[in-house]
Amino acid sequence: MARRDLIALSRTMSHALRHEPWLYELELDAEGWTPVEALLAALRAERNDWADLAASDFAEVIRTSAKRRFDLEGGRIRALYGHSVPGKLERTASTPPERLYHGTSPDALDAIRRAGLQPMRRQYVHLSNTRADALEVGRRKHREPVILLVNAAEAAKNGVAFYAGNDKVWLADRVPWQFIAIDG
Ligand code: HQG
Image 1 (cartoon, protein in one colour):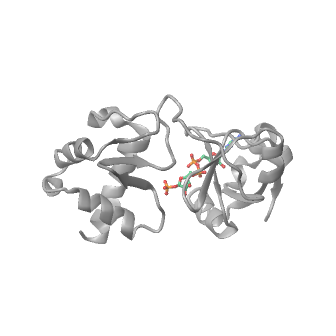
Image 2 (cartoon, helix red, strand yellow):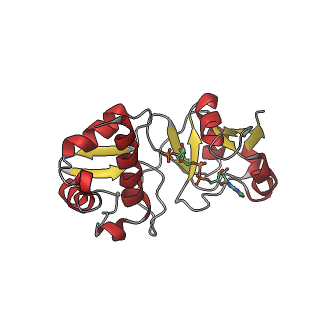
């Protein structure tokens, strides 16, 4: 599949598996999984050039993407993070690295100072392992994003739950400002 088509497919997979599965007649289980065949059936009907879509196309999306967004295993598929579906998915809290990063717009800073990092429209706050990744995430919101350094070890010690997303992304419940510093 051409790179452009892989990106379009990945976007639609994200929409179906993170946000509005019901539009594709999909049901996600408690951990966000749905049968590969069900997603294939829905997407084949979505676009003429997806009429021959196969599980190998999902595998190609995963293999060629810089970010690991999906798990494909045992005839099932799920998004690893980013969900906004109602009903929090079941996740097991685990010990985060000492520090995590979050890139955001300077316009959000006052609100974050007051309310902490909130999940907003998603189920969890999304944090990056590296400053470089946070910068990239923040650039989706502003040309010159603010980078926040999250003292994850201290937050975890004080009861904030963290969950592994993929190799670059950690998820958390609300992170109060007391565990956050501005890192440029
Ligand atoms: C901000 C992409 C006001 C927060 C990325 C962020 C990521 C607040 C925005 C993943 C706030 C939410 C998620 C508060 C937080 N008041 N604004 N109290 N607390 N915010 O897009 O983290 O490419 O839902 O700073 O790589 O930017 O889709 O979250 O700017 O991993 O796979 O509210 O999405 O991955 O924005 O990005 P988002 P995010 P994919």
